[in-house]
Length: 269
Ligand code: KIV
Image (cartoon, rainbow, N blue to C red; front, side, top):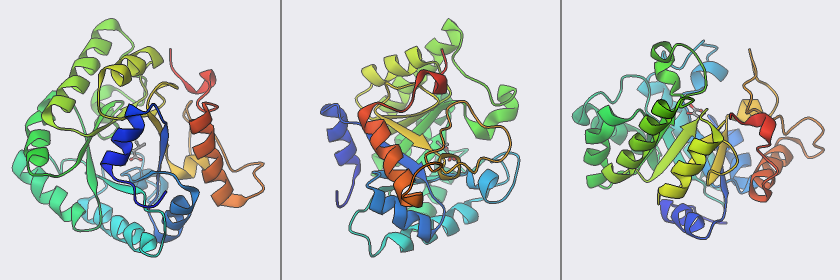
């Protein structure tokens, strides 16, 4: 596999080849992710939930993402396989183009190769500002956990025709503004399929059905250590796997490539 770049993922999309993504927050898990041949690694602000024990991702700071990104990047130094490293930009760290580029620069200098931002229309100027300057941006639409209070809770987004149209239009606008990847979280399968087929950039789904170009899971969830209510899209790949954590990561990767995951029970209509 060797070094994965954004152009590797673009080629995969062109050739209708799936790829996978998983979160990690430290050097040891990062090494296992690299060995599993999973192509992209996200230092997600989900670390607020799974590491810090918070109820939401809102308390996570830019310093904390930077710290975990540095740990992950150090873990990958001696690895043959190098997944593409994506850093989440935390809550309110990207409210204007100027603030966004300053904080994105900090994360890139901590080891990231791309930054991920949650939101649609209001973000377009910042996405354009970063991409014009050669900084890789990943969008994130659907259920955007940083604004869970405004959304009224952790629930499926785009369930009505009007909401679906809005998310679709935002996805197209993010691509036009220069985003090179898009995460779609908790949206109906039909909407994710339409967006994936329309966009040229690769689309990574989580609770977005089987038709996206890729799937992402929080590593703790896929290892069966979900705390609190287990989301519908989560599958435990560790229980019953005789090859430990590395085996679980490899099973997730294979299950996505072969289309065995996600199944109907993991998706929203
Ligand atoms: O923070 C995170 O882990 C994420 C993924 C769930 C997509 O944003």
